[in-house]
Image 1 (cartoon, rainbow, N blue to C red):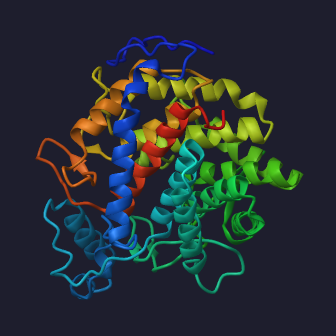
Image 2 (cartoon, rainbow, N blue to C red; image 1 turned 135 degrees about the vertical axis):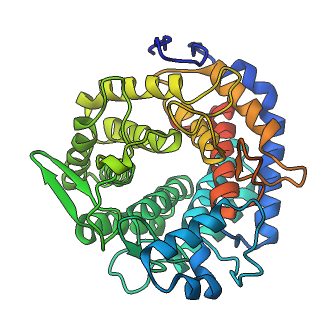
Amino acid sequence: MVKATRSSDSSTLEPGVMPARGRGLAGLRPQIAEALTGIEQYAEERSFAGWDPYDALNSPVLRTLSLGLKYPRIAVTQALKRLPVNLRPALLVKPSRNPKGLGLFLAGAVRRYRATGDEAHATRAHALANMLVELRSPDTPHACWGYPFPWQSRAFFVPRWTPTIVNTAFVAHALLDAAETFREERYLRLARSACDFILNDLHRATDQEAICFSYTPIDQLRVHNANMLGAGLLARVGALTHEEELLETARRATRYLLRYQHDDGGWWYAEPEYQHWVDSFHTGFNLVALRRVVRDGGFAEAAEALERGHLYFLRHFYEADGTPRYYHDKRDPIDVHCPAQGFVTMTDLWEVSAAPELLERSARWFLANMQSPEGYFYYRLGKRGPNRIPYLRWGQAWAYFGLAHLEEFLAGTADS
């Protein structure tokens, strides 16, 4: 293990290293389990359907007002996303099942089963997997998943159910978790088909020996975390199926990330200047996927970049009391994604650099500050006040995914 040291520009406490899996965290296990059960009850009462920060264009009212134009679409989406009051019922936005959210819930349910042996979690996992089979993007030759709403980015418009590499990777990893735990071959077949979506349906930019996959089949964007999520999936499946094409493609995609790592260990969200920011959870996506390629893809030459990136993550994305930061250089807004992905990043990379005290402080802060008395988790906290809208995919699924990683880690059953 490598002990993290404080960098000169860090404002967080120094993460330490200890052999045990977070001794101080052990006392939190009942509270973590209670929080997870609360999320399960909340989601199941709603049949895993809910609203999303980006579902504005599911409103017939807002679609009409946006006139089918780029900037009005962005404006109505951002306005609804930022409002702390949920106007979606009045705007005729119906709750929907989100494949990415269901994938996060599936991965969490599998981890809860492995941590506790409770068959209720296995039953929940199989039900979620069946929902995901039904929600595959239509009219596609390979297994892939998109969002149940159209969305407009600064670069392009994405119709409803257009598959993305991000959604597909999260869902396929969850199916692999279920395949490995329950010995279900059909789940592995779906994950392998998702690899064909990445290999055959997405654009790829070639830069010498490096490649970068597009976000969707209809764009040419180069986004680091999206590319790495695809690489991590290819490496994991390739290790299971012994396909060198998948492993080598994963390594080539990872070379793109390595080429653009900053000297301090971080990465921009993407290389175009308008995407030059460094945030917590996308950095976490990069690191977890990079660890997957190093281990499953046999890409040992990337181990040093992984170590530097993880130390950067530990130093820059937390306040001293465990409060998460959104950006590397400022805290607000405090988004539920940040601490949730932080649990995944720190537990998955424990053998790279263990940070038990930071992990404990973060978990205690999260449970004390972002959970409502009703059991669901808030969307955001910030200088302008809290946004307590209980988004299902963005909030509940991510809280569940992160806390389930933590529960499994403390139970000693996590794959290390």
